[in-house]
Image 1: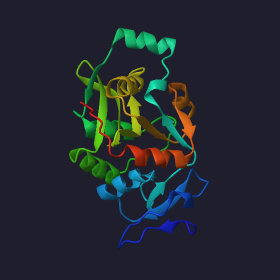
Image 2: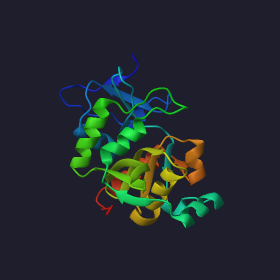
Image 3: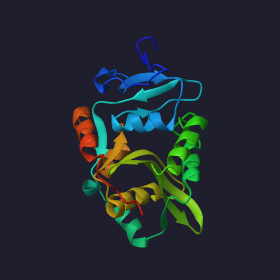
Amino acid sequence: MSQITWLEDTNYKFPDVSAALTEPDGLLVASERLTPELVIEAYTRGIFPWYSAGQPVLWWSPNPRCVLYPEKFHVSRSFRRTLNNSPFEIKTNTAFKEVMLACAAPRVEEAGTWITETMLSVYCELHDKGFAHSIECWHQNKLVGGMYGLILGDIFFGESMFSKKKDASKVAMFHLCTSIKPFLIDAQVYSDHLETLGAEEIDRSNFTDIITARLDHQLNIG
């Protein structure tokens, strides 16, 4: 951690994202605290928090950045069958905390979770302030999938998703792309799964330019 800049407690001013380390994944700075104000400031600069319990708050700005343009969302043949069967009821912002808790639940391929108690509290406060939102898939009155993230301007900054039934998180993403229609979805870091949905990587400078250009726009999540 000796190479990482610490945000000064007096002003918490983020450095330019060009100062982020190439490895691992654009680690930029660390801080002792996580607050709603810091999160919003970070997102407007192309930065996001990602850390585990027991660590300082770590702030990242990877280059390239993984994004999804809604019009490029890929619908496979098998997923088309799911959509045709319409197995889920889609709701927004009715169970934000529950979505976060489901995203934080242990997964077979992962050890632990990066959604700490502090992060849960801060993002729930951001939800109460109208910045953080959940898109939910319900089946027989049970929450079975969904995703959450922040909306600034008309950009959706995706944080995490979960599925308890096949394709539930994909259906939430499809609803985001086709009904809510943000200008851009921030997917943060590349994965093979995201690529199957149509995500792509763009240069970080292009990403931050898009943020600056879109912050004055509005997005109605419904």
